[in-house]
Amino acid sequence: MSNVGIVIVSHSPLVAEGTADMVRQMVGDEVPLAWCGGNGHGGLGTNVEAIMVAIDKAWSEAGVAILVDLGGAETNSEMAVEMIGEPRAQKIIVCNAPIVEGAVMAATEASGGASLREVVATAHELAPS
Amino acid sequence: MSIEAMSKVDLKALISAAADTIAAHAEELTTLDQAIGDGDHGLNMKRGFEAVRAEADAFAAKPLPDALKAIGTKLVMTVGGASGPLFGTLFMALGKEISSEPDRANLATAFGKAIEAVAARGKSQVGQKTMLDVLQPVHEALLQRRTGPEIVAAADNAANATVPMKALRGRASFLGDRSIGHMDAGARSTALLVRAVAETIEGHA
Image (cartoon, rainbow over all chains, first blue to last red; front, side, top):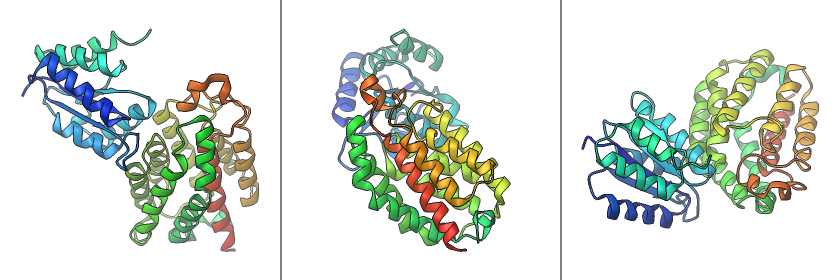
């Protein structure tokens, strides 16, 4: 698929999966989509390895936009991007946007074939100024 | 041997000392984190350092820079939370900058670069009630060629100095002024690690 992929990273697997459900229902299957949540040990948190797997799953040559919730999700996502390394890392962007609204808006934009830059810009418009 | 002769230090002994102190203080770290964070710091750090201890032989067989990078990667993958990438980055960056047989000057320079990497990873700076508030004074003590016990004291004092600070990064920052009056858990674990490393090196005298 050539559309930009969307990855949802929440501290809670329930929030991540629920957000992904909303994206699927509202946007459909035109966008590569993956989610992860939880610390990998049954608790709340985020996990670098799981984020790397999710990025692989949602990978698109057009790039991947990551939507995160609280700070640790952002730190872990940036770490995951760094560990994936170039050349793919330059096509992965962690968005500054509310996770649910950001994921739905980014996926809507992506489903129309928008570039990674356009998808991320759409999500960023939702960020509190 | 003193801290002047870092290069001869047994990495396995350092790993064991670090894992021991984190395990011994896991509950205390969790209690600190429960006050102003999400209460998982002790458990997370213990899991990470036990994972490093489990592979201590393999790490110790590598040249120091590679060993530190591998330890950092292991911490990133096992600690979890925001502490995983932060402590992992500290070790990974230290491994990138340190020489295989570091002298005091190289250690100080590498440590400084590692602190910059942690600050960039956490988008933070000194004075925001984080591990950086301990790392920075330790770096200064290294640059000033302080002794091991002086470095340990600098780290402990710096961790204590986070008590009256207002948290500006991480989960604790959500509490605003209510974060004042509690020690930062990451600052405490950093001070514990500094003590473990310094005392192990000094203990080989």
